[in-house]
Length: 183
Image (cartoon, rainbow, N blue to C red):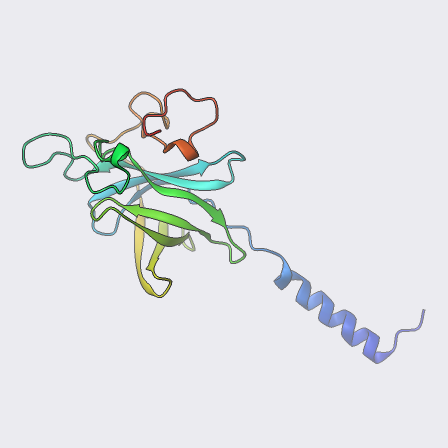
């Protein structure tokens, strides 16, 4: 087969372009992360029917009790059925999906105001998780969370929906798990 200079150039361009067309595999963000303000530790883990999504749970709060000495509850939640649930252990990252940029995107819940935001999370450096939340698609803010390997006093350590563990919202709970508290 004779290769012309044009054919050779096209073949070379194809070889250079192919790697950029491949979808970047996101770095697994699973772990315990301290929020930038130091008020909470969030456990990030795989979830969903195929275990390919990312969910996150508040497993430690700097101030777990309210002014009356009772556990804080999610009283600002727009779902009346969830307003009495404890803030410690609730799900806040909702089944993020991998995107073509090697990041995860979806929704995050802010218990401080009872609102959901678009969120993208990714990890470019070991021990750091970048979290970018947006409202209306253009009003955005970013934080960097720090990975924690130690155990904080009062931190939930059990499996999701298990003893001393956080609770998945019903739509993200492992199938066949009767222990879903937030259904």
